[in-house]
Image (tube, rainbow, N blue to C red; front, top):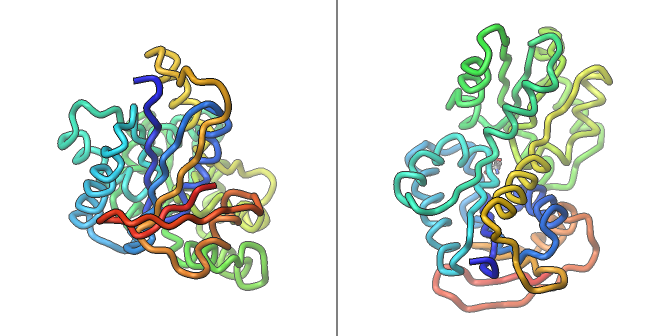
Length: 275
Ligand code: DGL
């Protein structure tokens, strides 16, 4: 078990924010990342489709016999975790919802928490229900920010357009005087500067990727499942579609300039990136 990889999937490249942290917390581990770039975005789709795609992504990762699978997508975490647990009862699944909620509850002083995410995530009400059921004095203000994902994909992470859009989306949260905002979408940590600029210094932004990674590391320690081989584990990146600009965006997410692309010819996936 210990030398098996950690599987991570997301609807696209956003989950690389989580993969980066898992690499930091578990440097010796082999990581297989799958980004469903052919079918992204999930945030505009129905629960049924998100469940179906998440099921296929998990099946893809299972061929590598992972010791656990991280659902690094907030939309899939909200809409498909229960379904995946039911379909793969013996698989250890780590989602991004619980760590986000716990972190926000630890940080808030006023009890006024904002949640921003895709339309599907916000409409699922999973964040709102999880926060309120943990503590019924908490007030949750949730807003979908659908244009944030294409902005990040375009690399417009800090310009006049991104600032303008952020100020429109975030105005209601500002008016509600939230002191904590959950970045409930894998892309949003890249807009942190713009979001913080609109909300002001007093508002704590919650990105759960570190907590997710800490949870993975703790799970491996508990089960004595750390990889026994010495040296840094590889991060292998699989995408269901490789557009010409994918490499550029992957670099943006990983914060590194050298990204090597290697082609594969499996049935489901046309390409693999080896970083
Ligand atoms: N990965 C998705 C999420 O975290 C964002 C992109 C999408 O809409 O698929 O919700």
